Image 1 (tube, one colour):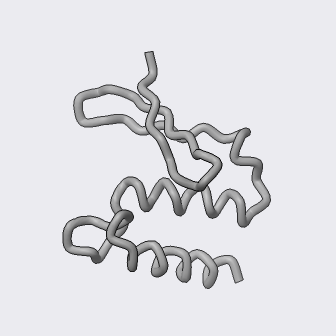
Image 2 (cartoon, rainbow, N blue to C red; image 1 turned 30 degrees about the vertical axis):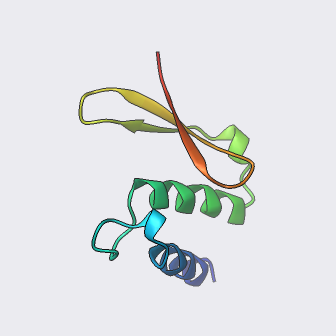
Length: 78
């Protein structure tokens, strides 16, 4: 049941250009972040208790937070 939900969510996000790469065939980092937080919600895991961090190519580290509208924001770590 969870696998089907996940596949449906991924397909839904892939249909939205804001969440896909230039070819529109796979999720970009924003799409993957949204899928991650949506999956936590589906599993009844409190998103406030989780920290998602992204390491950039230049070595910088960003903390990814979710806004109340479901979008994500990157906050550079000091």
